[in-house]
Image (spheres, rainbow, N blue to C red):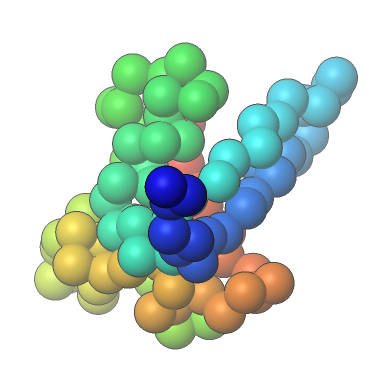
Length: 95
């Protein structure tokens, strides 16, 4: 029995200003929460989940819940609600 098709997003993640380029190609379901996507990226890159991060999307900025800078809560936000297919979402890290 074939698995049902689930809408998904594919991303190539180049890291600016690094030579040679370092990137990973990731595919996640469209309903993947941004907090989960962060963990997927951390795992794919071999990182340990400690730098602060921020998703910049067409719908606004999402990150760890913090009312002071005005970030929206990434734990409640599915990827497909903030990024249209082919849209531009960026993930920044405080490194």
